[in-house]
Length: 45
Image 1 (cartoon, one colour):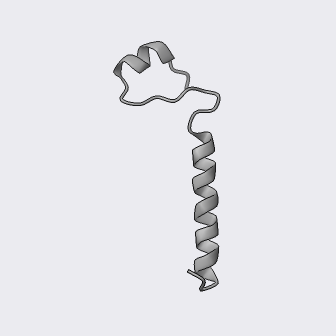
Image 2: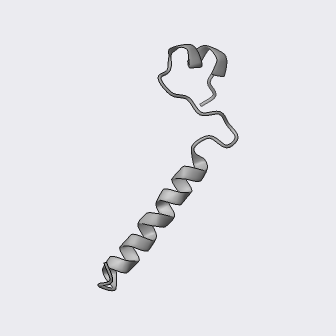
């Protein structure tokens, strides 16, 4: 849900803004895991 960024940033250890945020890192991790799984399945890893 929506969060008041200003007040949450005072008490949170870490916070990411929207848009942007952590989305690009999530996509990169999913792609890396997919490539790793494909390599393992083919016996290349």
